[in-house]
Length: 116
View 1 (cartoon, one colour):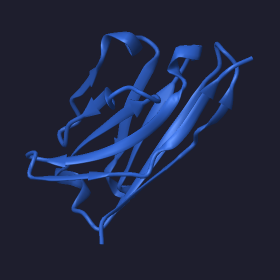
View 2 (cartoon, helix red, strand yellow):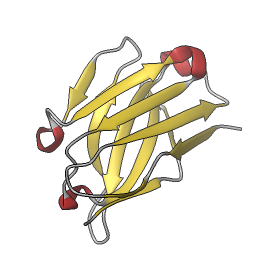
View 3 (spheres, one colour):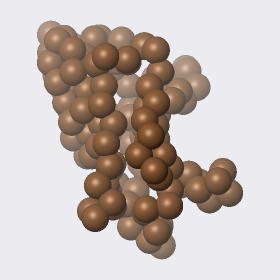
View 4 (cartoon, helix red, strand yellow):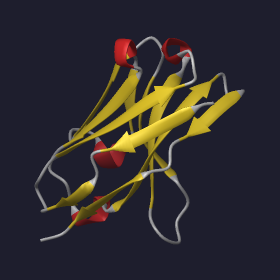
């Protein structure tokens, strides 16, 4: 059974930081590209950051300079370090595992609220 379990969300003040974690089980983690998405009510889920199985990272423009994605294959984990959070970053953040777009799995999400 495949599971992706996110953690680390919560309430943070504008300008603050969070580190989101996602631990995977039931997959051969090393071969999967890992991604973080986010979703707000009424909007489609959108990609935030990606890290390939080889460690190449990509970030969308609205988080560049504020976010770092990393992975630890030994722990089957992917992380999202998010700095200088803004109210518009408020969303549910989802972990995604993708192998060649054939096997795609999602976590249940972790909520991030940025408010003073």
